[in-house]
Length: 116
Image (cartoon, rainbow, N blue to C red; front, top):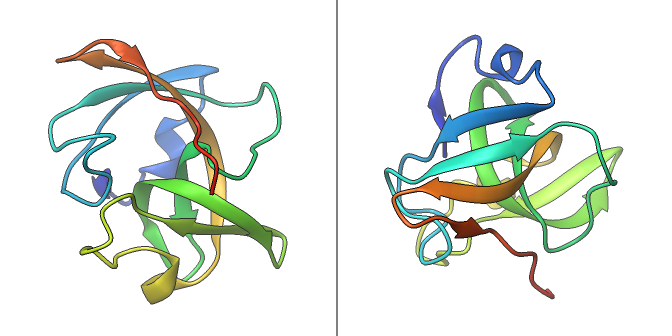
């Protein structure tokens, strides 16, 4: 989760945007406090990509999750931490705003897709 900020989706206007991860839903891939770069545009989202999105039922909430499958013109998302269910299981389909390409702090490195 990125955090609930009413203008959260509006912050992703540039091709590359820095986003701060909050919460445990993407552990161990991403942890609370990780800073990532999000790319808007570029190649299409694929299953297994880590993305920044907005749930249609929670448009005020910008989240970082893993894209599972396209559904109803959007994406079904899951967190990597199965103990946390604040993903499509709770909120339904989401609209992807960008794809996470790398973590730049505190442990720099690429954020890779993974087969689902």
